[in-house]
Image 1 (cartoon, rainbow, N blue to C red):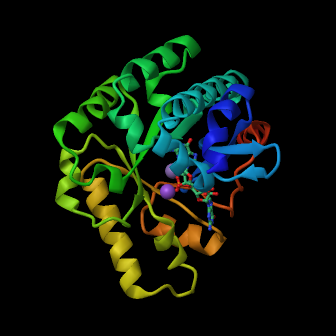
Image 2: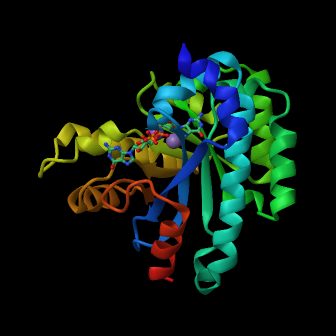
Length: 262
Ligand code: G
Ligand code: G
Ligand code: MN
Ligand code: NA
């Protein structure tokens, strides 16, 4: 595969870049942070989405250095936002969410790399959230959970991404060192019609109430309309992300959005 063999040189040549999508507090609409989403500016094919190359990078192992690069860039960016965001201290420092692939979880350097990056940048652990998909943690044994536990003990948030798409063993949640559920976009899409499907409403209501009783915060993905945002806010969701607020974009944009409500 041409893309696969081009990956290592692409990392060396700096062809990857990161877009940031704001995370918004549903209660007051303020920007609280952003999710980092990597892209590849390929010299022939133009901008490639992560769906095109993350699976290849996972297959070849390049995901480990690529993931480390994404983490370092994103945390550096968070530091830069925090330094320029002095007006909004009441809201706490702007946070950064970074996706972890399952291969990074099994790599022995994960905890130390993360500690090093936080120390080098001076970003507090509680301003970092690592997103792991529900499917990566299904059936996870203690060895797999150990690095996540260490990170959680340091104060790093762990979010369960795409929640509700795997077979959700809700009882299993108690065992995971997770502090945030990211409700899959499909739930948000079912809030499109007004009034929304009563069964879907009950399901989201149930997830939110279970999450809160376990001390987990709920972030919703894929919010595209104000009506969805309002419905999800009423259902008790805490934070939202989606095109209604902003598409993924360059880091300066997040800064403008965050300062606008500072
Ligand atoms: O940005 P986009 O909406 O196209 O993202 C598509 C998918 O790629 C999402 O599931 C997202 O979690 C994943 N993704 C984006 N950036 C990264 C990254 O840095 N590492 C990993 N492992 N996945 C990522
Ligand atoms: O990590 P995760 O799989 O959640 O990645 C987020 C993905 O969702 C990215 O590909 C991002 O571009 C996409 N996305 C973000 N906001 C929206 C939205 O409002 N609607 C839709 N359809 N996709 C979105
Ligand atoms: Mn994600
Ligand atoms: Na997701």
